[in-house]
Length: 244
Image (spheres, rainbow, N blue to C red):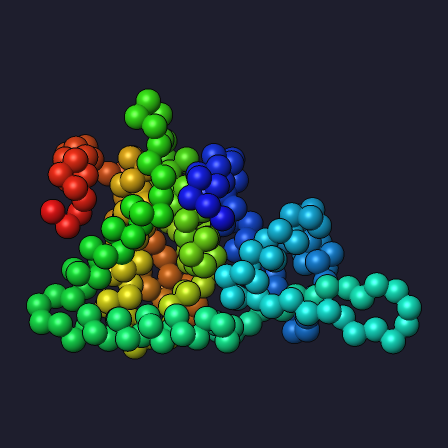
């Protein structure tokens, strides 16, 4: 998915990440590989929509596609199942993440600050800034954030409890590195979310990230961005970015 395509997803009334998180949870509930139709009925989506999200989960490395064995004539069905960890082709990236996280953790001072700054810069890079004439409201900003997080592989889901907005992260694409160096890796993720929202000129910020509040679930808390913070972000960008 291209960066411009992410913004197209952000304009949809229902963010891609919300439905994909539901599909992932449904898939995890099957003890055996399941057909698209079975998953679609359990989640309440059209078959084509369910297939779209299942293929996205396969690309993210949290599901795999198989073909149903058949001994009788007829086209075999495509089956899907959730997987516990990264696929073989992603192992080198997992190792790289662990090396970088452990290197940052060993630096003097507060390595989480460096990790947060790196994540924030990466979030800005992954996001297309809207035109100056366009105003991004809270709903569009949340959808844009979900689209980026979904593309990275977090399987996000937006939640609202009263006046509190949250984003549930159902899958950590760097789980092994996070378990070894939680402070560094979670700081990267927190910074990434802040960078996305800043680049969108959103009225929201990722105020806090609570890691592993439930097994395999982290919670990001969204809050209104103070006006002086928005203007400060604009001046920082004009000077050349968060590292200036």
